[in-house]
Image (cartoon, rainbow, N blue to C red):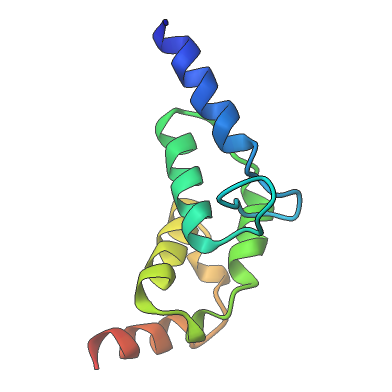
Length: 103
C-alpha cells in the first residue's frame, strides 16, 4: 500500500466523524466532543488537510468552558489558538480556567 493511499484512508476515516454543525465525534453516530474534535483536527492539520474552521470554532465556543475540567478545556484552548480565534472566547472564560488550574 502506498503512502498516499494510507493518507487518503486516514483522512476519509477522520472526515466520516465530522458533524455538519461542527465538531467531530468518536463515530459517525455519536455527538461531537472537544476531545474527538481536538484529535481529528490535529490529524487533519498534520496531514495538511484544511478544515472548515468556522463551524468548528462555533462548536468550541458553544461549550461552557468555565465548567470543563482542565484537560478538555486545554484542548479547546489549543484548538482556538490553532484557528487564531482565542480572542473570540467570552470575557472572563480564560481567567476562570487559569484560576482553576493554579489554585
